[in-house]
Amino acid sequence: MSKFLNKIINGDCLKELKKIPDNSFDLVFADPPYNLQIGEKLTRPDASIVNGVKDKWDQFNGFKHYDEFCKAWLSECRRVLKDNGSIWVIGSYHNIFRLGYHLQNLNYWLLNDVIWRKKNPMPNFRGTRFTNAHETLIWASKSKKSKYTFNYQSLKCLNDDLQMRSDWTFPICNGKERLKKNGKKVHSTQKPEALLHRIILATTNKGDSIFDPFLGTGTTAVVAKKLGRNYYGIEKERKYFKAASNRIKKTKTIDDSYLDTIENNKSKPRVPFGSLVELGILKPGTSLFDAKKKINVKIMADGSIKYKESEGSIHKIAAKIMGADSCNGWTYWHYDLNGSAVLIDSLRQKFIAEKQI
Image (cartoon, rainbow, N blue to C red; front, side):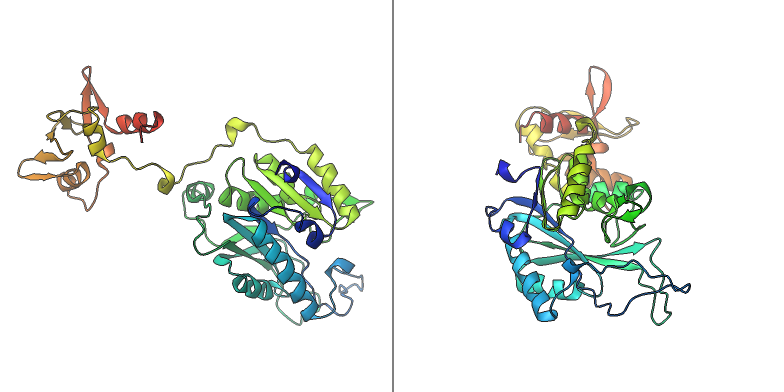
């Protein structure tokens, strides 16, 4: 498998994909040809020509040819994806609906469609339709049963403690990040690193392996390397491959101590309070009390606690005292440790750290 880690290949993705073993990658990010149906030359009001996408790699002999191509690479990507892996595909109104159709027919399980709203989209020079100000991403797991990665807490933190929505606003790639040669864009559709940063942070973990079958100028590999992930990419066009190679070489990985992310609550080990009683960490008859030491309860042999006429779990009794629907007993109750009041949650954290579960 090391043959397919932290490397990029100059070749045709359909041919190179067949060389990759099954179940190799945790994530696939694919930015395929869009098969743009532009037709005529686009000009600005001053009669200058718009430098849009007119490359040969984006041209197909009709929808049938494009559909066959998409079905082929999506099939191969599903094969090389691990059972709990997921895939992101990006496209415009020209192709995203066809990609979604093939994803479902190939038994991927659709999780979200995400709108990338561009802060600085190209204007509609003819004034004959709405300004095309967004692209669409589809996120799907390999199957309905896949236990895919989603770093909910990290995304929430990234968004000022608000749930991350499925509409994202980023500028198109420009400025110093945009690769240019002799004043001209190296690639017509280079994606911004910010977009890949969010995707990789959201749906992979440190050390995971990411595959990009249409690497272009290397944005996926660059961001993967920065974030301590492994990467493998395929790029057919020699000039893009060279640009990607140089860009990746210049990229440094963020210090490992800064790559840890917030653990999802669902992924944290569950520790029943009764386990601490069974193991003798807290003995039956031990007193627990609130922060002000006004409420005092005793631990029973089965891990329940009694307060006046009520008995139940540490959570249930704390909620009753608070007059609330629910309460986290771990952060409500204290115990005495050498004359100091200490949260029982400290025992839970020590329990987890020592891997007693």
